[in-house]
Image (tube, rainbow, N blue to C red):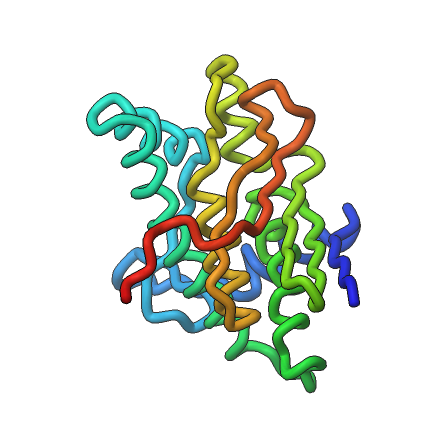
Length: 200
């Protein structure tokens, strides 16, 4: 069965209030924010600075190592975000909560300002597809810097991988097949077979 999860513009506005206001707690003594009861501090950061992180690493270690480092940081962020969201769920989750937790990713990303997306999940083949019709915030920032040959959003690819794997109990990796920074009209992330060598 194929599942499709999306967020309308009106829902995106409501998710912004929920994700960026209601679930954000400020500790005035520390001057630090916490999201959804997570133990890790949360802060606002310009999307362009995440892109700068990738560009600086590319200049130091090359594209592939830089992409993997950015991807792994995004992966942990996505996994942790899905983990916190699973604890916040108050309704009875369908499909053992897997598809419901996966679906909540679109609202979380939109509400956090990362971009409005649509998630498609085929529970027969296991294929997962995250599409950002207007691009991700990082893709938009990268496009302002000029066109590039390689995708600019490995952090987001890692994030959707972490969120998906935590939600579904899978070990998918994701590739960015379309990116605003390459001249595409949107950003798209598709699940692929595990790319890294598996430990025996």
